[in-house]
Length: 223
Image (cartoon, rainbow, N blue to C red; front, side, top):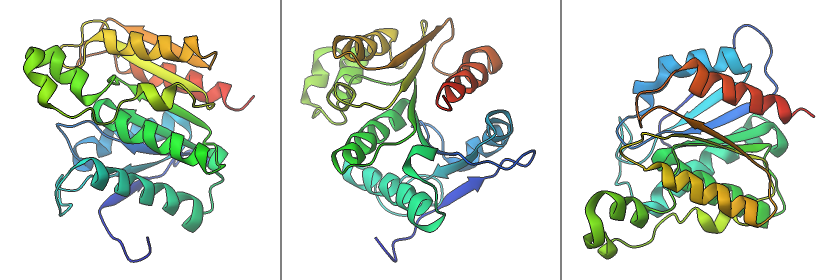
């Protein structure tokens, strides 16, 4: 994908040399400018460099956001980490929050099919599928939505370790979505760390419900 350009920001850990990179795919109602300062703290806490990837049509990124175009941006960002910056696949952790869980799960599965295995996958407030989110919010009228980014399929076969964080009071992506994805992992005998919180979609304890569980999960990837 040489010559393909879009906004992305590498947030580097300053307190210690970082050998791990986290590819961060953000939620719907924000762009990389909104999460930059937060991710500076993330990088320091997790001792990792965090690459923020922008979707088409978000922030200053041109184009239109649809399933294929978002997937393309995320794949390009991964290739940049591995091919240009020299990270090994096992040193890359994929992080997807809400909307970002779709392209993250798909990328992890695609890489596995191609013989590459990322170090881990972190899903924060993930959905079962776009259609299921619509049904939760809109009722059966959401059946007209195509079943894009069905996370059950990749998670049913993904061998990388997975962390799922989800608030029990989430009003955007109901907690049931996380439970279903956890059960998919469990039914297939695949590793899954499940961290339920008492938070909503956007309001939760930054340290207890986010920084700490991710830090603990990253620690297990070193063993």
